[in-house]
Amino acid sequence: MSAILDLRAAEVYANNRSVADTRRALDSAFDRLTDGRPEHGDPDWSYWINEAQAHGQAGYSFVKLEDWPRAREHPRTALRLQGNEYTREGSLRNALLATTYVRQGHPDLDKALALGDRAVATLTGQVTSARCIKHVRNLVGALAPYRRTPAVRRFCQDAKVSSPPK
Image 1 (tube, one colour):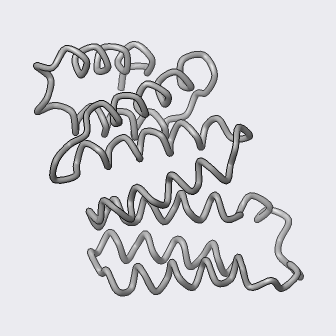
Image 2: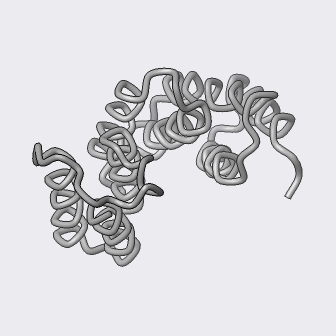
C-alpha cells in the first residue's frame, strides 16, 4: 500500500511540476516494490500493484513533466512486463507511449501511429474504458498539427470510430 501512495504522490508532484519530488516519490515506490521483503499484511485489494503498474504510473508522471525519454522508458517497460494479460492497461500504455513520440522535439509519427493503432485496435470491440479513450483523444489532440499527413488523418478517423462520442 505504501508503494501505491508513493505513486499517487508522484502524480501530484508531477502535476505541480516538481521534478525532484516526483523522482523521489517514484524511487520510493520502486524501492518498496523491489525490496525483497515478503508482502506482509498488505490489504487484499492491493493485489494489482506490481512493477508493471508502477512503470505505467511513472510514465504518466514523466509525461506530465514533459520528460520524453523517461516518459517513453517506463511505459515500454510496463508493456514488456505485463505481457498480454492486461488489454486495457496495454491500450492505455500504447496511447501514452504514442503521445511521447508526438510531443518530443522531433516527432516520430510512424512510431506514434503504430502505437496508436494498437491502442485503438484494443478499444475496438475488446475494451471499454473511459480512461483509455481519454488517452487516445489526447493522442489525437497531439497529432492535430500533422492532420494534413494522410496517415495521421486516417488514424484520427479510426480513433473517432473506435470511441463513443463525449
